[in-house]
Length: 202
Image 1 (cartoon, one colour):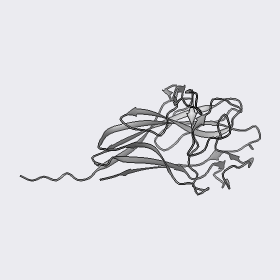
Image 2 (cartoon, one colour):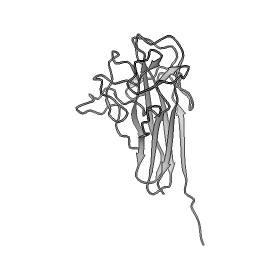
Image 3 (cartoon, helix red, strand yellow):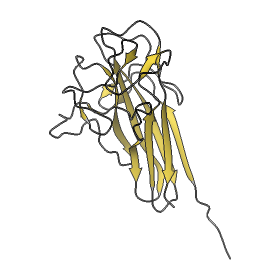
């Protein structure tokens, strides 16, 4: 008898309903696999949303899921040139409470005085993430530890959000999005896109 098992990897994104607890906060809006509709933003309050990532693979070397945004959020998707921008038509990637958060450095972000867009992570089943919302160290107090997304417009390389070192059966992680505009952000409809890529090591 002989048999062959083909190399496989499956990856999916699913939405999370409003009023669910993810990353220690309650989601404000319902997401789908393809959309995160924050809706009308409040100048004084965070809007929180989430999606769930799921990976299965028979790769003995495991998998990595990376993420990168095409740009910071611009009015009608217009270009937001540079990283540390102050363009009134761009909702900048947040710098966190202390102004030092980046796409590779997580920091506590629980004050609405720190404006912008960012994300946190929560392990669901099996996966490993580079940090979690409740990470507690010299930079995070364990309330809402966050990062920026890597910015393709700023030539930043995609970063891992979810990994494992061997085969995986329906591993999950939750990506928790947070946004709050600056009082100087111009009126308009803001948008960007985020690309997740799942890669297996066979």
